[in-house]
Length: 198
Image (tube, rainbow, N blue to C red; front, side, top):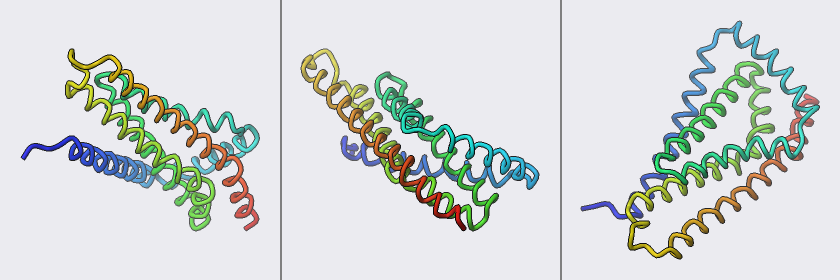
């Protein structure tokens, strides 16, 4: 029995989630393969980096940092082999998250757990679903283009409508990224100031 369009979309959603999970595990394995000397070196670098970020962090800098991933994922749906770009960006986010989390655990032990919860979890509760959703939307958009729905018989207004919907979803994702950036600047910083006392 041939797969329907909904079946393909569900499979893509599952594949995207598994792909991100494997990327995160790969990042964690990479961090755990480092020697204790490397971890000590990274610890010093992390402390310097955190200090610099505290002094220079602003809403705009955080927003632009997260927006670039959103833009690249969305652009992946705009050209024929763009799925590689969207998947690559999502994989990079997964590897970075897994690597950073594992390094914090190895460096700070139990305190590293609270550091991850306070500094990374709040904004990523918004960012990760957005990145998942936009990757899935980009894949679905590419699937519709490759399936011939934009063929010679397609009406120009139908093509315009689909591009408009794709663009509106992108604008919505930008608003969500803005919210995540606001949370990192104010909520995460407040939580970090609390655990810093301990």
